[in-house]
Figure 1 (cartoon, rainbow, N blue to C red):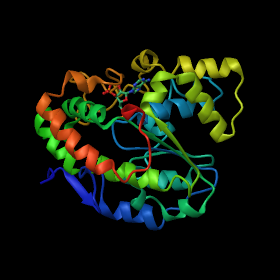
Figure 2: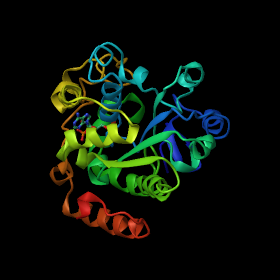
Figure 3: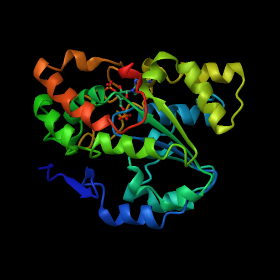
Figure 4: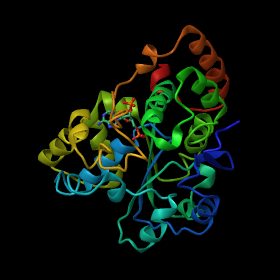
Length: 287
Ligand code: A3P
């Protein structure tokens, strides 16, 4: 059974302390997406905050005034968070929005709009490790502290964000129908500059060399660890306590190798291979 700390809606699980079904329904059926909107969509722990920082800096032509003075959740607010809905609706365009929603709960108006979305996907093994550490810091994830106990829950989709497999299958499945740029966390790591340029190109933004340099410099792991407006150190400790585990943590690919036992690898691989069979996408970590 999924933790009672979650609200479950059509397979999607989020902390019940901050999310509710009425808002999920409202966002799906009533929320009006605008053509100028840009969405930063992820399954949790896949690089959401990183993309918030990249989008902020691209929008400001590499100027750090906003990224150093306004918290990331205000610069690129959560679409499905009840607290933000009214504010979002009155916000001027262009709006930059973050979302963990699976495709079947995303605003219907998105699919008839010209809005753009970036979907960042990460090796689910590293997502699991990242979630394990995040659960130490997040007051609302207290039942997910043991990584071996977390694995079966993750494979069944009984964790923060629901099923990784359903999330990824859903979003990759619509990639030819909407304005969607698919990126991987691993590509961002391998070639941050090239990825920033791809994002600029997708958004139709022309940045000069100096501006691109600044976006890259200010979105490295080190810069973001040092930026109080992104490292979550200003969040109320009852919600996220970065003293217990830093939010901007290790920031690498393959950390799962330091945490998975042979039994965990076997169990993960058996489910993974079966579950991704029908996903027509070659993941960078499988190559
Ligand atoms: P780790 O816990 O593996 O280090 P999200 O923002 O979706 O919650 O994802 C958090 C993960 O992204 C964490 O992974 C965090 O360290 C990583 N991350 C954030 N900014 C990063 C950056 N600039 N470079 C590399 N990884 C980054």
